[in-house]
Image 1 (tube, one colour):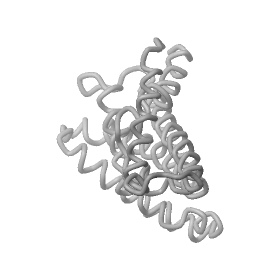
Image 2 (image 1 turned 120 degrees about the vertical axis):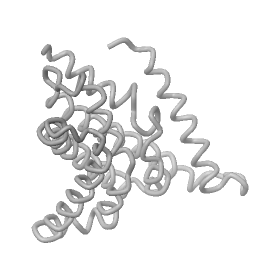
Image 3 (image 1 turned 180 degrees about the horizontal axis):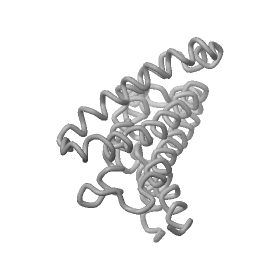
Image 4 (image 1 turned 180 degrees about the vertical axis):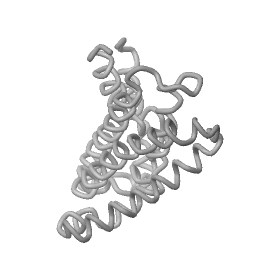
Amino acid sequence: MDISAFAAILISTVFINNFILSRFLGLCPFIGVSKETGPAVSMGLAVTFVTTTASILTWFIYDLILIPLHLEYLRTLSFILTIAFFVQFAEIVIQKKMPSLYKAFGIYLTLITTNCAVLGVTVLNTDMFFLKYKAVAGSFLMSALQGLGAGAGFTLAMLLMSGIRERLEYAEVPRCFRDVPITFIIASLMSMAFLGFSGFKI
């Protein structure tokens, strides 16, 4: 497969089909954790790690277990269990081996289990890179790259939103628009801005 196809997947998931601003997945942490840049970036990096690894793990489960045993209808359930198990396992390992990193992530690593963007990218991988329950050429690499791109797009959106919200702390926002209302307005404007990328042909 041409390397341009892999580049197209990465660019598309970060800008054109951004999981937060275009697909509207993972909005809970986007709104709740984007008040400060530090926690927002930590959450973004943690999500990137999990989406990439979850894409790899679920590809193997779907291709080597569910399809051969004709259990494709268990895809969502098995993916949720895989993501939850992996996040808990990663949390234990990081806590034991890298306590400083675990402290930096705080509660955000655990919250990834309930982030619908992680499940969304794994399900989308099977929809896009499997044809009639058979993996297309380069399916594994494309799935892993889409997981990486989804996490990078998530991190970009979190970084932009946190930067804007930190500036708003010093702005005179009308009382009725403070906190959640102004956050939704900003998210809407950011989403509209990212729609400008949808015109690109890759």
